[in-house]
Image 1 (spheres, helix red, strand yellow):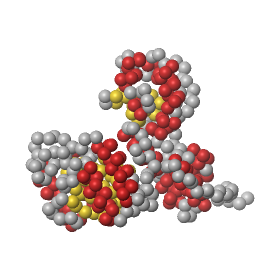
Image 2 (cartoon, rainbow, N blue to C red; image 1 turned 135 degrees about the horizontal axis):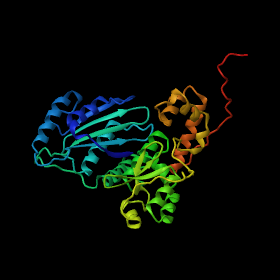
Image 3 (tube, helix red, strand yellow; image 1 turned 180 degrees about the horizontal axis):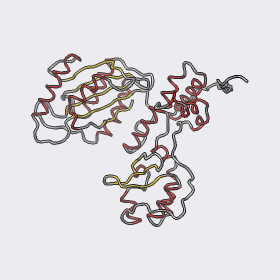
Image 4 (cartoon, rainbow, N blue to C red; image 1 turned 90 degrees about the vertical axis):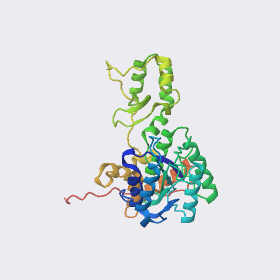
Length: 354
């Protein structure tokens, strides 16, 4: 189980978020179950409009706080896992209790898509009784510990990637990898963290640091109050602090105030670059991966979705799917089932016979 707070756009408000949960508008998704908690309007989908008005009225009773009064929690389950409705309602209740929001109004919906079953919970942070705003403190740690306890309570599968990293940035990257089976940019940085740290150790100035990072196709850029790694090819970014020693404070203590990268007299030859690749690097040479990345059939799809859609009609995709599943099992500390591979003959050209 993965539980994470998802950012909401303040301008959209409670109504837009509630209707998003009820509509399940994302491509390939459908609404499974829906219920309302602590709303006098009722508990069912047909009560939603009245419940939205009730939530708006409750939020309107607090004029002191300017913060967003809506809290959006997404709880995702392991592949193929779909708990009973009684278990889902208990999970919703326990998360609310752990966050200190047990008495607050909630909109809840479960969505099914081709990748994983998940539950959306919208909390109204304004208490319906005293109309005070409750904002959960250190909610990341609360969500992780509660998820672990609920997995044990209900016998749910532990999802690879939850709670093994110290920062939200790494957690976000692990969630993406678990759902796409592709390496994230943050994952690429972690793969080369020792090399990056060695560059930092040997550098004596910002220029030397920038030049060393160029060897791995990344640069350091200011963002907000800190710094981020930015991939020079794709523009993807990750917080610099995800690599030990690269927090802005640490870097400026050694090199002085941040200086942007200058122009190199000689462009250094890169040792490595971030690119799209499967979590199991061996599968980058598999015919199914090559077909996905080189054809329109895989355009806009994740590796995982492509394999799940193609496995029923394609032997190469079916083999790659089993190999990738085995690799994920190894990462999660389980004994992977042996996958029998076979020599797949190259497809014959559809061109005219000569």
